[in-house]
Structure formats: structure tokens, C-alpha cells
Length: 245
Image (cartoon, rainbow, N blue to C red):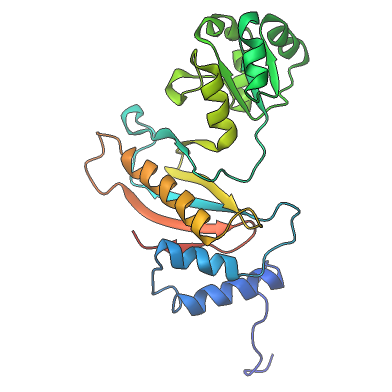
């Protein structure tokens, strides 16, 4: 290869990914310059994106300075994104017969009690993204707790998915409430929108700031040192952009 030949493609990466990486390197002066959140999102919007029907998903990635093996340092919370995630949320409501009409009218996609529990127990299939439950239904859910747990949809008072205010819960989750929890490496990942006509820079920035504010307020009391080590943003299949803290 001639010394004057330019590298047009990173090893193991597509040409589009490589070109996007070059744009990011140029904007960050070879990763020596940290961008603020607004500038970072602008840069993401300027990248060559894949042609997905609903648009690429945008994500915030946090590296937390916690010990994920200690229960008092687990970060787990939820955030209401003002403009939603752009994803359609299929929601199930485990309610008593008296609450079924209210749940359906409020926008729940799947509603039921004993019969729904028996169906899930029999089929061992989950066809919804979120689940809420009335407190009196929680004593019946252990029969399918393993199935719901594996799918990550088990209602839990700590995540605000259990309560008598069924209509409010349904509307909140359908509108864009996002649950988050650190992984085994102490990292945290939150979707904050998509690149499509539903979202402009202002909406994406408001969503991202809401997520950032929520994570900052979720700092465990047991963590006395610096809490957030780094923040990156990316879109589907794009290189990440490091954001200034």
C-alpha cells in the first residue's frame, strides 16, 4: 500500500461507520475535546445514519464509579422523558375485574387478572414490554414471577409499577417513562429518542437532560467519591461521542 493511500475503512467496520468515526474525530480534535450535550447531539444528527423505518435510536451511556456487587451502591430508578422514546410500548395491566374497563380506556394493550396469569403460566410467553399491577394482584404473580422476571417485566413497587392509580400508571408508561438499572460492569444505558420527524434537536436535548438529571439524583448515599466517570452518546450503529460532565 502506498504511503499516500488514505484509510477509507476501519478494520472490521463498515465504510459508513468509518466515515462517521472520521467526522467525530475531526469535531473532537482526535478525541482531545469533550463536547457539551447539545453539540454532541447536533453531531449525531449530522452523521450518516442507517435507513431504519422509525429512525435510529439515540442512547446515553454512563460509566458509574460504583461497586455493582454491593447492594447499597446499585443504581435503579426511572425517568419520565418529556417527549417519549419514540418506541411504541406494549403494556400489560394485572388488575381486578372491577378495574379492567378503566385499564383498557387508559390505553393498556393487555388487561386481565387470573385468566391472564394462567395464560402466561401455560404458554410461558411474554408479548408485552411493560407490566403494571394493582397491589392486590401481587400476591397472585408469584405463579409467573420467574417468567416475568426473565423478561424483565415483573411489577415492582420500587419501579413504580405497582399501585391503585391504574389510569395514571398506564398513561405515564405509555407516554415515555423509562426504567433503568446499572449492569454488572457498573454501566448504565438509557434511550432518549430517535432520529426522525417526531424529534428535533430541542426535544432530544430536553429528553437527554431529563435522563442526565435523573441519573445524577440517583447517586447512592454509599458512594462518597466521584459518581459518574464518563458519559457517551451514540445512535444505532454509530461510534460513540464522549460528553463533558
